[in-house]
Length: 126
Image (cartoon, rainbow, N blue to C red):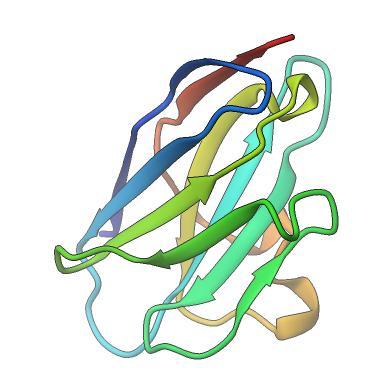
């Protein structure tokens, strides 16, 4: 069973930076797609970024392109999300999710993922 744990959330002022981490365990075989999502109360979960554990392209939502960077961490099965130039609209609970096979066209759709971490809160003040 895949288990995911996020860390690194916190509070920053607008323009600041945070780095989130997602540590995964329980991968059985093959590549997985790891996605970052965020959600604010009353809104649907929004896809932020996605990357395959086997390497390759990283995908971003238009709202974060140029500001957020997803990359493998130094530790095995760890994914980082470097968030720069944070704005109040970035404030949300951030989740990482994993799924063995996700079509490229649906990488940022939360419905495609079955395994989720508990989330980490990011607060951005203006």
